[in-house]
Length: 94
Image (cartoon, rainbow, N blue to C red; front, side, top):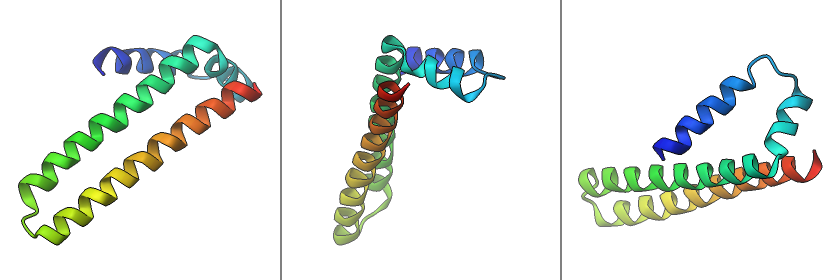
């Protein structure tokens, strides 16, 4: 995730001051879209794992623990699928 974060920061900083068309064209390049998708997947997976540890450490009620774990899984899934959809839509229409 560190290498992907560095790539993401360099990518975003290179687009500072760029217009919408330039930004979407940069995201639509195949390697950028692939790396961006991998970054989104890794970021949501990392966030899920971190929040799962917080739930396991601090939530002691079994029903609440189960409910939060299910919400965490669903939230992570919705987030990563939304990110992949947005990247794919930009890549396919640009």
